[in-house]
Image (cartoon, rainbow, N blue to C red):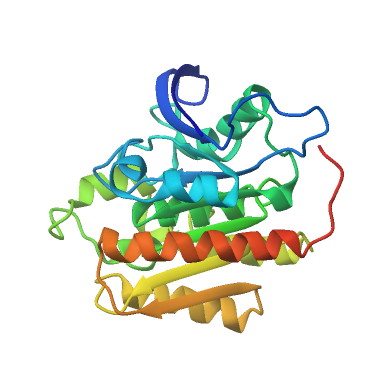
Length: 269
Protein backbone atom coordinates (compact mmCIF):
# COMPACT_ATOMS: atom_id res chain seq x y z
CA UNK A 1 0.00 0.00 0.00
CA UNK A 2 1.37 3.39 -1.03
CA UNK A 3 0.24 6.61 0.63
CA UNK A 4 1.18 9.80 -1.18
CA UNK A 5 0.61 13.50 -0.64
CA UNK A 6 0.82 15.32 -3.95
CA UNK A 7 0.90 19.05 -4.62
CA UNK A 8 0.52 20.36 -8.14
CA UNK A 9 -0.65 23.42 -10.02
CA UNK A 10 -4.31 23.22 -11.02
CA UNK A 11 -5.39 25.12 -14.11
CA UNK A 12 -9.00 24.89 -12.97
CA UNK A 13 -8.25 26.51 -9.61
CA UNK A 14 -5.40 28.72 -10.86
CA UNK A 15 -3.22 27.79 -7.91
CA UNK A 16 -1.33 24.95 -6.31
CA UNK A 17 -3.48 22.38 -4.59
CA UNK A 18 -2.77 19.25 -2.54
CA UNK A 19 -4.38 15.82 -2.58
CA UNK A 20 -3.87 12.59 -0.68
CA UNK A 21 -3.68 9.37 -2.66
CA UNK A 22 -3.82 5.69 -1.74
CA UNK A 23 -2.50 3.12 -4.21
CA UNK A 24 -2.87 -0.61 -3.43
CA UNK A 25 0.64 -1.35 -4.67
CA UNK A 26 3.23 -3.56 -2.98
CA UNK A 27 6.06 -3.27 -5.45
CA UNK A 28 6.50 -3.51 -9.22
CA UNK A 29 3.41 -4.57 -11.16
CA UNK A 30 3.55 -7.18 -13.90
CA UNK A 31 3.26 -5.74 -17.39
CA UNK A 32 0.03 -7.64 -17.94
CA UNK A 33 -1.59 -6.54 -14.66
CA UNK A 34 -5.00 -4.93 -15.23
CA UNK A 35 -5.39 -1.22 -14.51
CA UNK A 36 -6.54 -0.36 -11.00
CA UNK A 37 -10.07 0.89 -10.35
CA UNK A 38 -10.27 4.38 -8.82
CA UNK A 39 -12.49 6.39 -6.50
CA UNK A 40 -12.34 10.15 -5.99
CA UNK A 41 -13.49 10.87 -2.42
CA UNK A 42 -14.72 14.32 -1.44
CA UNK A 43 -14.72 15.73 2.08
CA UNK A 44 -17.41 17.58 3.97
CA UNK A 45 -18.01 21.21 4.86
CA UNK A 46 -15.21 22.96 6.84
CA UNK A 47 -12.83 20.04 6.26
CA UNK A 48 -9.97 19.23 3.86
CA UNK A 49 -8.19 16.54 1.84
CA UNK A 50 -6.98 15.01 5.13
CA UNK A 51 -10.46 14.16 6.43
CA UNK A 52 -10.91 10.68 4.97
CA UNK A 53 -7.45 9.52 6.02
CA UNK A 54 -7.83 10.97 9.51
CA UNK A 55 -11.27 9.66 10.40
CA UNK A 56 -12.13 6.70 8.21
CA UNK A 57 -11.13 3.13 7.35
CA UNK A 58 -10.31 4.10 3.79
CA UNK A 59 -6.71 2.86 3.86
CA UNK A 60 -7.86 -0.60 4.90
CA UNK A 61 -10.68 -0.54 2.33
CA UNK A 62 -8.39 0.61 -0.48
CA UNK A 63 -6.24 -2.45 0.13
CA UNK A 64 -9.17 -4.83 0.57
CA UNK A 65 -10.91 -3.79 -2.64
CA UNK A 66 -7.73 -3.04 -4.57
CA UNK A 67 -8.96 0.40 -5.49
CA UNK A 68 -6.97 3.61 -5.78
CA UNK A 69 -8.35 6.47 -3.69
CA UNK A 70 -7.79 10.15 -4.47
CA UNK A 71 -8.80 12.74 -1.89
CA UNK A 72 -8.81 16.41 -2.98
CA UNK A 73 -9.85 19.60 -1.21
CA UNK A 74 -12.97 21.47 -2.20
CA UNK A 75 -12.62 24.25 0.39
CA UNK A 76 -16.22 25.20 1.30
CA UNK A 77 -17.37 25.62 -2.30
CA UNK A 78 -19.56 22.51 -2.62
CA UNK A 79 -17.41 21.41 -5.56
CA UNK A 80 -19.07 23.94 -7.85
CA UNK A 81 -17.46 26.26 -10.36
CA UNK A 82 -16.97 29.80 -9.06
CA UNK A 83 -16.88 31.57 -12.40
CA UNK A 84 -16.48 35.07 -10.95
CA UNK A 85 -13.34 34.08 -9.04
CA UNK A 86 -12.26 31.70 -11.83
CA UNK A 87 -11.95 28.90 -9.29
CA UNK A 88 -13.58 25.95 -11.03
CA UNK A 89 -13.98 23.33 -8.29
CA UNK A 90 -16.43 21.23 -10.30
CA UNK A 91 -14.14 21.12 -13.30
CA UNK A 92 -11.23 20.31 -11.02
CA UNK A 93 -12.76 17.19 -9.41
CA UNK A 94 -14.80 16.10 -12.41
CA UNK A 95 -12.21 16.50 -15.16
CA UNK A 96 -8.76 17.85 -14.33
CA UNK A 97 -8.04 15.62 -11.34
CA UNK A 98 -9.17 12.51 -13.21
CA UNK A 99 -6.96 13.37 -16.19
CA UNK A 100 -3.99 14.18 -13.91
CA UNK A 101 -4.20 10.94 -11.92
CA UNK A 102 -4.70 8.84 -15.06
CA UNK A 103 -1.46 10.24 -16.44
CA UNK A 104 0.43 9.60 -13.22
CA UNK A 105 -0.80 6.21 -12.03
CA UNK A 106 -1.71 2.79 -13.50
CA UNK A 107 -5.44 3.31 -13.03
CA UNK A 108 -8.24 2.35 -15.37
CA UNK A 109 -9.62 4.80 -17.91
CA UNK A 110 -12.87 2.87 -18.14
CA UNK A 111 -16.01 4.61 -17.01
CA UNK A 112 -17.26 1.52 -15.18
CA UNK A 113 -14.01 1.40 -13.16
CA UNK A 114 -14.19 5.05 -12.10
CA UNK A 115 -16.19 6.22 -9.09
CA UNK A 116 -16.77 9.53 -7.34
CA UNK A 117 -18.00 9.70 -3.75
CA UNK A 118 -18.25 11.88 -0.72
CA UNK A 119 -19.98 12.74 2.51
CA UNK A 120 -22.26 15.66 3.37
CA UNK A 121 -21.00 18.57 1.21
CA UNK A 122 -18.88 15.99 -0.59
CA UNK A 123 -21.92 13.77 -1.09
CA UNK A 124 -23.60 16.63 -2.92
CA UNK A 125 -20.38 17.29 -4.85
CA UNK A 126 -20.19 13.64 -5.87
CA UNK A 127 -23.79 13.64 -7.11
CA UNK A 128 -23.49 16.93 -8.98
CA UNK A 129 -20.15 16.21 -10.62
CA UNK A 130 -20.74 12.50 -11.09
CA UNK A 131 -23.83 13.40 -13.11
CA UNK A 132 -22.40 16.47 -14.81
CA UNK A 133 -19.40 14.39 -15.92
CA UNK A 134 -21.47 11.27 -16.43
CA UNK A 135 -19.31 10.13 -19.33
CA UNK A 136 -16.36 9.80 -16.91
CA UNK A 137 -17.93 8.25 -13.80
CA UNK A 138 -19.73 4.93 -13.80
CA UNK A 139 -20.77 5.17 -10.16
CA UNK A 140 -21.53 7.68 -7.42
CA UNK A 141 -21.36 7.21 -3.65
CA UNK A 142 -23.35 9.85 -1.76
CA UNK A 143 -23.34 9.63 2.04
CA UNK A 144 -25.55 11.97 4.11
CA UNK A 145 -25.59 14.33 1.15
CA UNK A 146 -26.07 18.05 1.74
CA UNK A 147 -28.64 18.46 -1.04
CA UNK A 148 -28.96 22.21 -0.61
CA UNK A 149 -30.62 22.92 -3.98
CA UNK A 150 -33.89 21.78 -2.40
CA UNK A 151 -33.79 24.56 0.20
CA UNK A 152 -31.41 27.39 -0.76
CA UNK A 153 -34.28 29.21 -2.47
CA UNK A 154 -35.83 29.67 0.98
CA UNK A 155 -32.79 31.59 2.29
CA UNK A 156 -33.39 35.33 2.23
CA UNK A 157 -30.98 38.30 2.38
CA UNK A 158 -29.76 39.01 5.88
CA UNK A 159 -30.63 35.55 7.22
CA UNK A 160 -28.35 32.87 8.66
CA UNK A 161 -29.39 29.25 9.12
CA UNK A 162 -26.83 28.38 11.80
CA UNK A 163 -24.32 27.04 9.26
CA UNK A 164 -23.86 29.98 6.92
CA UNK A 165 -25.61 33.13 5.76
CA UNK A 166 -27.35 34.30 2.62
CA UNK A 167 -24.21 35.91 1.17
CA UNK A 168 -22.29 32.65 1.41
CA UNK A 169 -24.98 30.60 -0.32
CA UNK A 170 -25.38 33.30 -2.96
CA UNK A 171 -21.63 33.24 -3.63
CA UNK A 172 -21.55 29.43 -3.91
CA UNK A 173 -24.80 28.69 -5.76
CA UNK A 174 -25.48 31.93 -7.61
CA UNK A 175 -29.07 33.13 -7.97
CA UNK A 176 -30.75 31.13 -5.21
CA UNK A 177 -34.17 31.42 -6.83
CA UNK A 178 -32.94 29.53 -9.89
CA UNK A 179 -30.82 26.70 -8.45
CA UNK A 180 -33.56 24.11 -8.94
CA UNK A 181 -33.67 23.29 -12.63
CA UNK A 182 -30.05 24.37 -13.15
CA UNK A 183 -26.89 22.32 -13.62
CA UNK A 184 -26.43 22.49 -9.83
CA UNK A 185 -29.59 20.41 -9.35
CA UNK A 186 -29.04 16.60 -9.43
CA UNK A 187 -32.63 16.01 -10.54
CA UNK A 188 -32.22 18.31 -13.53
CA UNK A 189 -28.90 16.69 -14.47
CA UNK A 190 -30.57 13.28 -14.51
CA UNK A 191 -33.37 14.63 -16.70
CA UNK A 192 -30.79 16.03 -19.11
CA UNK A 193 -28.89 12.74 -19.31
CA UNK A 194 -32.08 10.81 -19.97
CA UNK A 195 -33.20 13.34 -22.59
CA UNK A 196 -29.91 12.77 -24.44
CA UNK A 197 -30.23 9.00 -23.97
CA UNK A 198 -26.85 9.19 -22.19
CA UNK A 199 -25.94 6.67 -19.48
CA UNK A 200 -26.73 7.71 -15.91
CA UNK A 201 -24.09 6.60 -13.38
CA UNK A 202 -25.17 3.97 -10.88
CA UNK A 203 -25.88 5.70 -7.57
CA UNK A 204 -25.40 4.52 -3.99
CA UNK A 205 -27.05 6.76 -1.39
CA UNK A 206 -27.13 6.34 2.37
CA UNK A 207 -28.33 8.49 5.25
CA UNK A 208 -28.85 7.89 8.95
CA UNK A 209 -32.36 8.00 10.35
CA UNK A 210 -31.24 10.56 12.97
CA UNK A 211 -29.40 12.73 10.44
CA UNK A 212 -30.66 16.31 9.97
CA UNK A 213 -30.28 15.77 6.19
CA UNK A 214 -32.56 12.73 6.07
CA UNK A 215 -35.54 14.51 4.46
CA UNK A 216 -33.60 15.80 1.45
CA UNK A 217 -31.91 12.43 0.95
CA UNK A 218 -35.27 10.69 1.01
CA UNK A 219 -36.55 13.22 -1.51
CA UNK A 220 -33.79 12.50 -4.00
CA UNK A 221 -34.05 8.77 -3.34
CA UNK A 222 -37.76 8.90 -4.22
CA UNK A 223 -36.95 10.85 -7.39
CA UNK A 224 -34.45 8.18 -8.45
CA UNK A 225 -37.08 5.52 -7.85
CA UNK A 226 -39.73 7.43 -9.79
CA UNK A 227 -37.35 7.97 -12.70
CA UNK A 228 -36.24 4.32 -12.70
CA UNK A 229 -32.59 5.31 -12.22
CA UNK A 230 -30.42 2.34 -11.25
CA UNK A 231 -29.55 3.05 -7.63
CA UNK A 232 -29.25 1.69 -4.12
CA UNK A 233 -30.69 3.69 -1.23
CA UNK A 234 -29.86 2.77 2.36
CA UNK A 235 -31.24 4.06 5.64
CA UNK A 236 -30.20 2.79 9.04
CA UNK A 237 -29.86 4.15 12.56
CA UNK A 238 -27.19 6.83 12.73
CA UNK A 239 -26.55 10.53 12.66
CA UNK A 240 -24.17 12.87 10.83
CA UNK A 241 -21.07 11.13 12.11
CA UNK A 242 -18.08 8.95 11.24
CA UNK A 243 -19.67 5.94 12.94
CA UNK A 244 -22.26 5.96 10.17
CA UNK A 245 -19.93 6.95 7.31
CA UNK A 246 -17.36 4.28 8.16
CA UNK A 247 -20.04 1.62 8.01
CA UNK A 248 -21.51 2.89 4.76
CA UNK A 249 -18.29 3.55 2.84
CA UNK A 250 -17.43 -0.13 3.32
CA UNK A 251 -20.91 -1.14 2.15
CA UNK A 252 -20.65 1.24 -0.82
CA UNK A 253 -17.31 -0.10 -2.01
CA UNK A 254 -18.67 -3.64 -1.82
CA UNK A 255 -21.66 -2.46 -3.88
CA UNK A 256 -19.32 -0.87 -6.43
CA UNK A 257 -17.15 -3.99 -6.67
CA UNK A 258 -20.13 -6.23 -7.35
CA UNK A 259 -21.59 -3.78 -9.89
CA UNK A 260 -18.29 -3.29 -11.71
CA UNK A 261 -17.51 -7.01 -11.78
CA UNK A 262 -20.89 -7.76 -13.33
CA UNK A 263 -20.49 -5.37 -16.27
CA UNK A 264 -18.71 -6.16 -19.55
CA UNK A 265 -15.42 -4.41 -20.11
CA UNK A 266 -15.29 -1.45 -22.47
CA UNK A 267 -12.15 -0.41 -24.35
CA UNK A 268 -9.72 1.81 -22.47
CA UNK A 269 -10.17 5.46 -23.41
